Length: 425
Ligand code: S3P
Image (cartoon, rainbow, N blue to C red; front, side, top):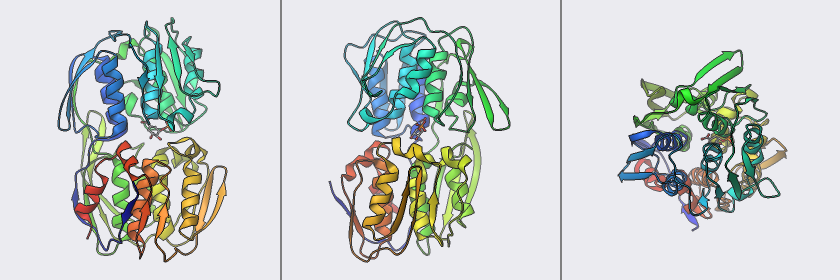
């Protein structure tokens, strides 16, 4: 579906967004591993989290859904059923990578598949450490899905991560939960820490080096949790409120985990008027209301260390950068090439369509110049975050704009259009 967007003059009001996608995936997985019934409130409505639920249904878990509340009947330690068919992870890298960690420790064989985009994404990054734990995993010749996992006797690992990836970290920590002896994951860059927080894993920190320990001792029990609202979905509306005149937006109960608020930090550094109110905690996860007001932005240098903490928000941050004083430049972000699309290419090609000057690097790009006055048809590359970023840019253009295959936004936020129409005038 090609979606057309008219120019928006201002945004005002309040939004209460569905639960954070990363936290929701983990809540479902942890509840399924636990013995007994867990209750997850404000679950993400994303297609990706549905992919996780469907995979665990095939592993014998039962779910009862009532609006945004999910009741999960967990299977307990090694209680999963052998799946009779392939497990379809859809578009979801988090489902595929975290589930592989859990399945590596089971006494049955399983096979993971995914859609066209997921089937191109690198899986070697999880296969390599899991094989060091003795896992019996096979990928396609190009190191991608389909992935076959056979039973094996796992052993603990001490693993220093070569890429900044919370998915790799979590996959190892989940596999290690099935062993008596402790495993250690070492990261030299801070990536989102929901897995260790939700499982209550022991951690130690020495400057930028963090060690996370996992073993059977931390195997989860059933729980009740209210998922904080998704900061990545919120970031599209934050940027819109900052860029439009006479705008003020209240975003309720947002996930403010320190490893996820890079987007707020950077927008504030750029001159954004953003305030946090009512800060509290939900099961070790920080939460609060965010107020965003119209601001004059200027581009700043983006430090390498913050990249893993803004990795999903770079598309929309670059839109803020296009309207800010100076040029928007991002480097050290090669990981963007391995997301739902090659996001460096997707951003650069779309900016060229909008008449901007772009210089593409292997690990980033720089963009500046004047936006075209014509209606532009942007390509979503079937990538939800690219689609939403260019929807926001379209609403800021004098003649509006169009975005291809816009239905792909359901991957993270199926209600994006309703939310936009609720606040826009
Ligand atoms: C995620 C981790 C990040 C992020 C993805 C969700 C997670 O991926 O881009 O959208 O939930 O762990 P990487 O771990 O590959 O960086």
